[in-house]
Image 1: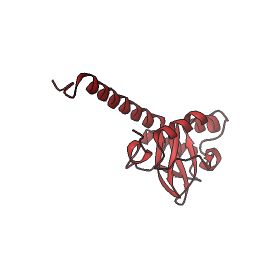
Image 2 (image 1 turned 135 degrees about the vertical axis):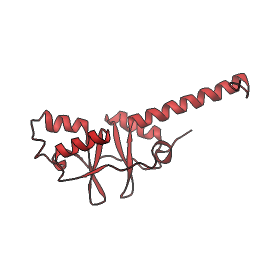
Image 3 (image 1 turned 60 degrees about the vertical axis):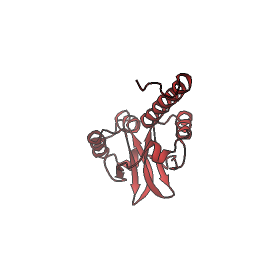
Image 4 (image 1 turned 180 degrees about the vertical axis):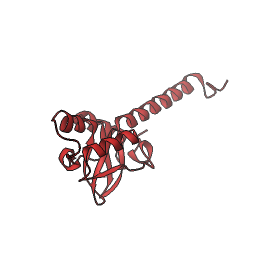
Length: 148
């Protein structure tokens, strides 16, 4: 089954966004509190960037920049690649592998829909494997397989 990003992989997410002027420290605290590894940077309602744990490590800590004066604008990946809600989990995974991403924002035109992660795709992959195994067992052992 070809699962679409919305609603099969993500749905009803609470969007976690930051502003261009937010400091690296404030963003790191937000990511810690929300237990997330990436945030979307917006200007008004428009997606302008993404900040990941990798960005924090490379562009703040390793670069020796002050987290209290470095802003989202300084450390974000600007104009990130995005997925569309109708894209499939396979398309998302392919893009992530080719470009070495772990997170991709999902947009519908200018509207920000959510963020998909490798972990989200892994969960879908496991679900598909389980469904495939059940289908194969039902075919091999008959429709009553596993019903006791």
